[in-house]
Length: 263
Image 1 (cartoon, one colour):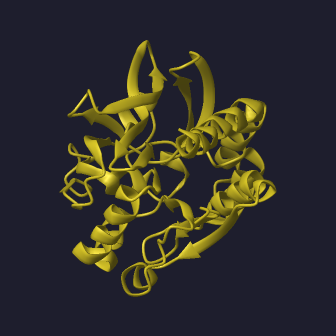
Image 2 (cartoon, one colour; image 1 turned 180 degrees about the vertical axis):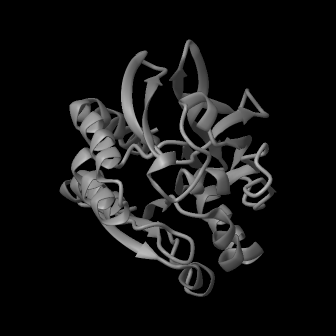
Image 3 (cartoon, rainbow, N blue to C red; image 1 turned 180 degrees about the horizontal axis):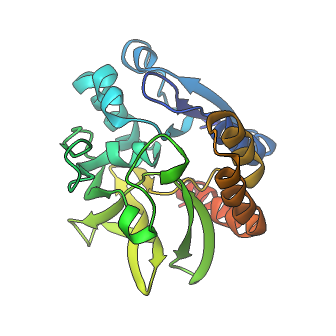
């Protein structure tokens, strides 16, 4: 059976997936791969993650509501899907969700969270946010905790610019199993930002950054969500200056997905 679909999780907890969906459509539809959405109920009761699904994408948002809806049964459906040859792509909250343990804003009492979501697809702990390293505010749903950051792709050592909003870096617990695809470049230090791991017959890719967010798409979202238009404009303008770099990072992650089905 040909894997000719990508399913994006869209349920309680997910952010607006418009940017992500359009980026995937632009890349994959010319290759004959359809982009669709799915919900927890469909995963659990209707086995929507079947052998036609090339990749299951868990987007940004809030990981705790993901678990509230999926629970052990939904998690096992996802694990079975990947083990049987599927590809899990977790972005930001989706990366936290796939990790062994989430450590979130541990030094801020009102935000602090330690959670095991029990999906356990990647042998790493997800630690966020990088507000100190990136010199932004602790996580919030406003502009103060959103920025751009430099990401270095390990294979070719090229640097790229990407949008960041509350994602993790990773502490790898099984280094022989996990490959670091890209690293944050922050003031002469590097931290794992995008990881890849085999899981059964399938693959897991997790990212702390929103590599899917173009300047054009981000500008639209920021103009709607945020009152401080000046700060929104500064971030969007910076991303626009490096749009080719951001698009190249997106393409590398997508090529990594396509490579796994050729191996």
